[in-house]
Image (tube, rainbow over all chains, first blue to last red; front, top):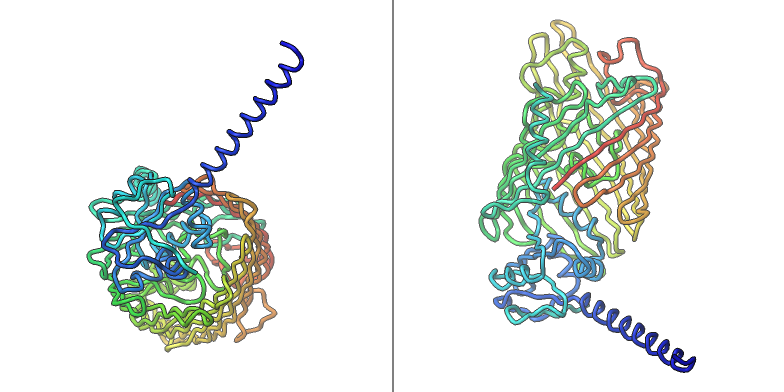
Length: 150
Length: 378
């Protein structure tokens, strides 16, 4: 292989690596783009960030229209971490500690938690009032999405 | 036998899968801890701590079921061994029905945790704290059962005051409390020769108001409690007229930092009667603490606090009438369920946590202490 061919091949490899990196970052960003989902019986289409925080912290049990809210969570993973950080201002450890305090003092029942987004979607689709979160890439036909406002 | 029972409880908790269980809608959670204490001089908390002691085990399991959207019922069973305190008996930590009319108004009835200051109702939930021992001036571990819960009822709610005024959380309660027959107060009494075979107790009522300020992370609150105690044993009686305990507190969380402080005052007169002899014990206890902590990473947290307790009704120069404790702590979370803690205490004064029967040769005014704990919670 001539020197020029070697340089050309190296440039091609560098380009491919760069492209793979961009695609990987893009798909990770999409995967971590969190969407709030709810059972189709839930009437509201948007929720204030403060109300969402209060529902997932157990301070509120109802949506703004008065209907009962059933918050559900993922057990872990990047989507769980992004949701807690962006909407509750908590880390997974802090979130768990808040709920442990409520549970062990008799002041609350911990939200049901799921291993996978598909299991969470199935539960939300089947449970009136259920509200949870998934990655934007997950299918959302069985549930409705709710936008979060400031 | 007590150790065997505790071990059994521990194994039961561990045997359950490493996650909270949900059986036909019933949520099951639990925790178990094992502590170690080594002190330079005196024996602390009725343990043989000057020789190093592992006699410190705690475990609880709770069952909760939401019967309707508004009604929840639950029970928590608790067992502890702290030196000569506690023992094999399973105690009902709380057992209540909780009816929430809406977010502003709810009711609980049964055996309900008592709010007093920042941590009273959660002081036995080791898993949520960085500290092995909470500030003993306000939350004495050897007597935690006394204020922890009452049999009666509670009204509670959350009020949103608007975007610029924050939120208000209120709780008001009334009921009956009993001293723990295996707890510190009655051990102290027994050391003096006054033994009770049935638990002394009395009426209690009070409330707690805490304000979540618009400044994110800042909470300010105040609690008040009125309590009476009467007891009768074969050798004599114990009488405490209704007394008033007040607590003011604040906490602030920002990012990896946490700060908190509390001030408590409890003036009361204990009257012990041994046959014809009447012994008044005046108490005007002023207790406070300040604490701060920092999260070094996802798994590691460090912090320090100073805890101060003094009985102003007696000579405050005597070590027996005050307790001052400088504390440094560290906690490491191995995973979401297991954690370990280590803590150093620099104690001045002997006003809290010491018993005559475990210190037969008297007490030295100062003592240093190392505490370690491992815990599991699901």
